[in-house]
Amino acid sequence: AQSVTQLDSQVPVFEEAPVELRCNYSSSVSVYLFWYVQYPNQGLQLLLKYLSGSTLVKGINGFEAEFNKSQTSFHLRKPSVHISDTAEYFCAVSDPRDDKIIFGKGTRLHILP
Amino acid sequence: DTGVSQDPRHKITKRGQNVTFRCDPISEHNRLYWYRQTLGQGPEFLTYFQNEAQLEKSRLLSDRFSAERPKGSFSTLEIQRTEQGDSAMYLCASSRTGLAVNYEQYFGPGTRLTVT
Image (tube, rainbow over all chains, first blue to last red; front, side, top):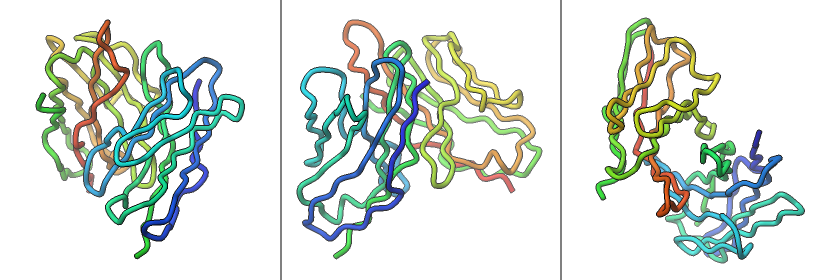
């Protein structure tokens, strides 16, 4: 079985500052990794995904994530955040055999002016 | 591609009543998933279909919950004898398997259920 741990429930950061949202996973099989974003009162939107290949994955809105197999981590980063990045961010894993997604509990990104 | 749609967007019901939600996936997607999201938590998997076949159900899906996907198109999720603990956002997602798969699930806006 797979599981996902998001180490921070909330992350405050000043506008235009860099941010890193941490994610660790556990699995006995190879998995696919995802970051989803949920804006207030909206559904989930895919930011980026890692399936295989290059461990640095670039996504939408200037976000990127790095897959680290030895540390079983998939941290999300952005070099300069904007007020529009205020949202909840979910790290997730899926088993390629059925692509059922297991989500973390989420990290609320709070942008300070 | 009109995206995944869900109806209704909000439902308020009294404890003990039955409710039914509908999900319309992206038309060429053969897989359809239901998730439940409670406040402060990530979405939790409930069940999924490949075409009309229900392939897996989570232990979270009690006997009061039933899901169908007749003809492999839209899906319904019914909750019988609702309880206050059923209050949550119910999310639907769809994806495509096969040669053109991109391993991405597309989520609908969700149905927010409040049981009073």
